[in-house]
Image 1 (cartoon, helix red, strand yellow):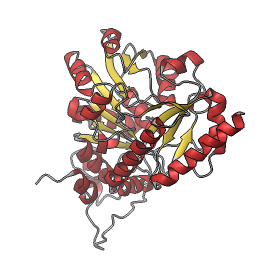
Image 2 (cartoon, rainbow, N blue to C red):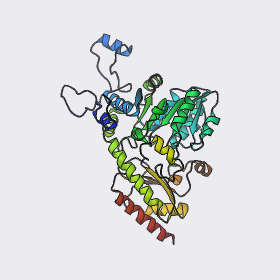
Image 3 (cartoon, rainbow, N blue to C red):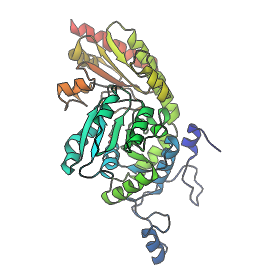
Image 4 (cartoon, rainbow, N blue to C red):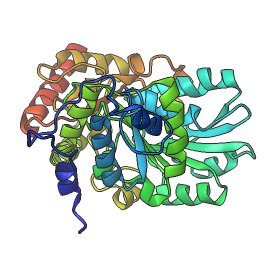
Length: 394
Ligand SMILES: *Cc1c(COP(=O)(O)O)cnc(C)c1O
């Protein structure tokens, strides 16, 4: 019987031990014992399934990955120590000198460093394309292009790309499509449905959702995951069993949390849109978003991130942030607590001014990761900070 998302997220569990515990145990062990010499030989020869060593696999990893595969509609996967180890491993395991990646210009800061500073050391080159100009992806393809890597929606520009179109482009040219689905989570969008071969996650964000652990995952086609598993087994980006346990538990509440994140975010975006001091507001499910129709087509809801700009540019943005009383100033996102970030001076400060402009980060852009507090309390804090930052302006 086909279960729904909510049920799969809750009822997919590792088998209980002889103690018949209801919650899954935490397997804090570096290795697993062999019954005898023959079993040890067979396990190492891949002649039988089973656990050997936690760098290779662990029951807490298996539960997390089984659940994520059911939620994303993928065949197999591995759990990684961070989102970045997922991004890096998914590229390094499959690419070699001479290969080329086409990536969305708008990617997470450390992904940008991997593409521009790290992979080129080993002869793997890249070309950036623009999410809001899909034809630029087609134009960037080379005979050596082996992977297309995108984030949709992007951080913090909230630009999208049509995954169905991109899936067809990748299939037509026999290129691996790798989608960082961190912003949407498997609840809002399933890139594998549109032909993505790999779906990568920072589980640190909405999947944990409570600002506690760092983790990641690579999900996708069996044959690709087999190669990635070989690479990971010998290079060691393994997730700690404790973090795997936390993340598997977190998935049980992903759907209810995402509903609240998205409802709060939409309401906040609507309120900001009518405020006289707000120059613009961007949110995928706001009809003024240039890709509103596409967002409605490929996402269940608009996500938990809203961006906007106040009159007065960068100085006003900083005054606004200093005037907040409740919202958190921290560099994470996807937490129960609403978080406010000024990307131009923090998360994206390493980019040059024109690079920021090219990915839609104006000096005054403010990013809000909308949390699960009552929307009236979130709005009160933002409203008073807008007002007090205007007073300071005079
Ligand atoms: C945070 C983030 C990452 C990196 O994840 P870590 O868990 O911090 O290593 C990658 N991609 C996106 C879109 C992110 O937001």
